Image (cartoon, rainbow, N blue to C red):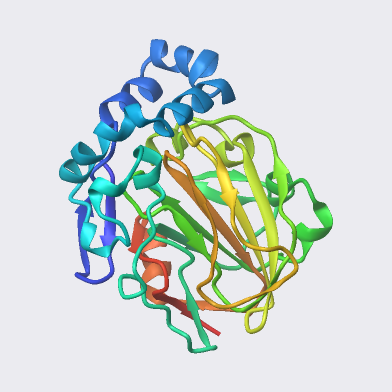
Length: 294
């Protein structure tokens, strides 16, 4: 059971987890863990399933998924019958009205939909992942020079579960560098898995880049892949001027994570998000909403 904080209602809710029984069995039983290490975490497994989600055969999954998880199709730019396969639906685009962007230059927005954790005054050698587990930023991106810039800064961990909108966006206008890609495994990023796999983010496939933002200094983006994520697709043009709220990329099927690192004193994260993180709860956010201030 995963409990999270709903900022709008100021209430705790229980997350509907896609494939919850499968996750519990895989990460909680000796046989499941053995199967995980031998097959599930491998690129081939996620690639095969990703190919299925790209095929016409997966189209039948769309209607069931929408019904089971109460997906609001009024937010989508396409109708249900227009999706050619499950990944078409999974990577669906939303209308501008569905995710309005706060254009105030002093307002820091969420890069996507998901469940958010926020940590201030971070120690680069001891970044809290979840439930007391930690990792090292240098290990995460394999670049000590870039890592050092974020000492005593802020770390934001946005977990996108399979039911979420799976495109991620720029938090500010500016120019974004080329993407560096790091090969890795394909563990789930669900809290069930995070509690079982040591330094999971450093073990998984990931990509990173730096947004030289106009208002919030240099923002380090790290996109982390997960089980059944066929690909992390970057859609932005590197070293080209972008606007706040522009799409940066998207994940194909699977739960995924976007991790942001902010320089010291660049942003003050909203107090409710910080408080819930201290209590051990993620806060539900949507792309474009205010989560901090300059």
